[in-house]
Length: 428
Ligand SMILES: Cc1ncc(COP(=O)(O)O)c(C=O)c1O
Image (cartoon, rainbow, N blue to C red; front, top):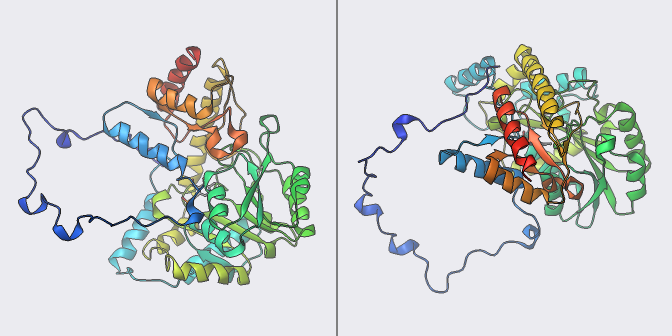
């Protein structure tokens, strides 16, 4: 896949000396009487379930970086949660063809049959998940997680999840009225969750375990034996497992193991994955949930009352992504591995930083040697060194003392950004 060029403000839209902003049309210059706030008007009061649920910190940071870049500030951004490659051409062409054919209306809520079939066949052969098309719901990955929380959690339920872990799990759990129970993981264990700590945290209220391998933010890949041990705990305690496998194709060493492939786990597991990271398709909003037919019916119920269905003309393109040539995906993973190795070497050369070599995803989670809170450190780094990384504390209490660096950036950007970080750390 070709690397995307960093966007610059194009010359033609830059203001030149003497340019005047366009005059506002007379009719638009006044707020019409009927939309003016009147005395006594009040904004809608937010529901209680939203209190204590912050907006996504990672999305807020990317918005800030875009804003700073648009002001002409030379930012090196390591905050991206998406591949910096373009979507492969065969997939784009398949989408254009479906648009040209007028495939622009609602589809069945669970997705077009060809796509459900393609996803099930892929999951059966690559992931060894014993599923058919009836076990698949086509939906954006994040929406699948949100709906799973609403569909399978009741207020007061407890949900076990690793600390640190991706920002939206806690939000989705809280929005369902349930309670996140974090299990600490350690730098020295490559942030792999310890099954004995899961067992020790189970109470009569525990309903679900959330797993994410390869992990955002640490890049760690859960070994097969650990997945089997956690599965045993889930079976013994009658728990549901939500297994987020969105980075399943971005693995550099070892193999990806799906929880739902473990004997007796399929019925109690909701496997979430999608196209965003594998084929550089984050903006297409296409993913899936794989689960028992009964669970898929519940999720589909929520889908019919929320987004109705995924975008129609992207679905045939998703079939092409899954069934078509995979060369570009493989090249992207090779490229990411080169960048990971480069970034790890450069970070290990910086005094005050240490980092593991993660086996998957495109994130590093360096530890820094300072008492400064990660949010303060990252803000200072952005302001003074013009490098954007995400504070570790955004991912849970155990993320304090770390930051997340996404190496979905060119080798030149990695060299430049880490040289700035080196100077910054020397002056801290
Ligand atoms: C761990 C994890 N799960 C789910 C998602 C959501 O994926 P999507 O953008 O395909 O909905 C992300 C996105 O960054 C992620 O990092």
